[in-house]
Image: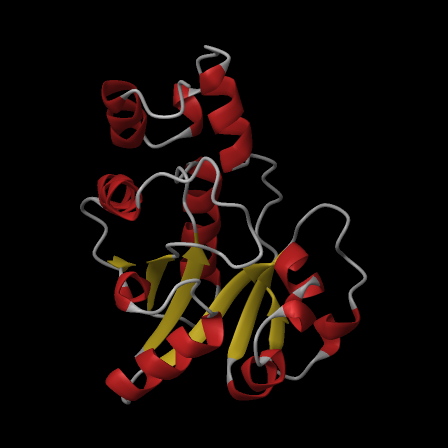
Length: 191
């Protein structure tokens, strides 16, 4: 089984995440897509990060009834901050019959040399890269394990959603319906 691993904080998950996931699942060689909820990205600040169980719940609401999607919480029980290479090795050992593909935006590929053991990631795993504005001439795009997936450019970010909610701007249509309802019900990002 070819599994795409879509890592992220998903703080919150939004329609951009879902559109990219859908495109990659339908237009690449992967059979299933796992959303890997990262408790804390070592390259990002933790300031407005919802607790991991809330982000897990938001993702579960977003993928309800989509059998090819799964929310993966493997990093919840791993040392923090979480490093992609450690997760990839752990999953590869736990599920030896699966082939894992790393899914990332071109902006992350531009910074991959800052990642722990990035050379092992590049040499041992296939990477599916979706476009991001301003990151179309990267040297690593020609690497043998890197494949560009021409998913549509979607300029929606979780930080935009959080900032808008704090300013009392209705951005409910930028999230899957059940996610928007849960965010509103729980008063997330309002302060």
